[in-house]
Length: 194
Image 1 (cartoon, rainbow, N blue to C red):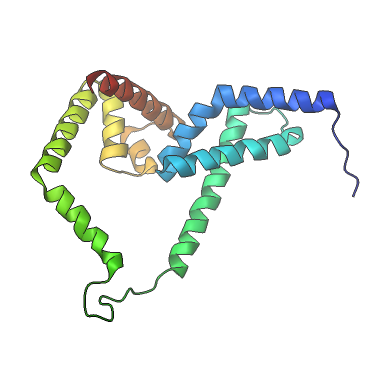
Image 2: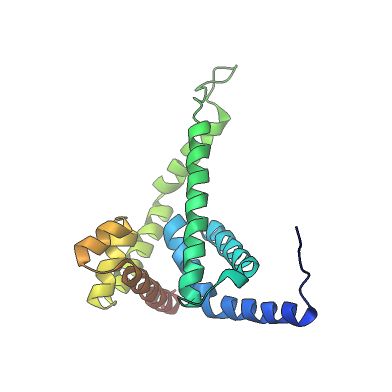
């Protein structure tokens, strides 16, 4: 196995390219990942793994597609791997929790459920949630009709990306662009109101 150590100029070139990728595509990849995994922390990790994999395999990039398309392809594989791992972990973790401990009381691991229920029952919390919901509805109402429709179906009604694309007769890449634009406009609108 013959591994060649890159020269200083090659390392500097790789750093420049990688920095350019992060600047140019970082936000897009992050938003794409959040749309898939619904967890910003996991999405951030997946995007970082994507950039690391891209740097390692930069020599294999043939240029037949844009750098963004190539990076999205790598990110998709990282997301698939992550989702497979989660599915396996869920299958392994299926263990019934005991409902009562030795003293006959409720298991402490279930007490959080009651705390959350109590919190959402309080009138001040309900008022906050209602006000927030009203602000979201107003902001979505101010979006262009097509963006509002895409956002409503995907983010609020939680329809799958395939179902939204079929229903609205749009491509998957168009869906992601429209969701990104809707989120940007909603963010701008809501930060102005809050």
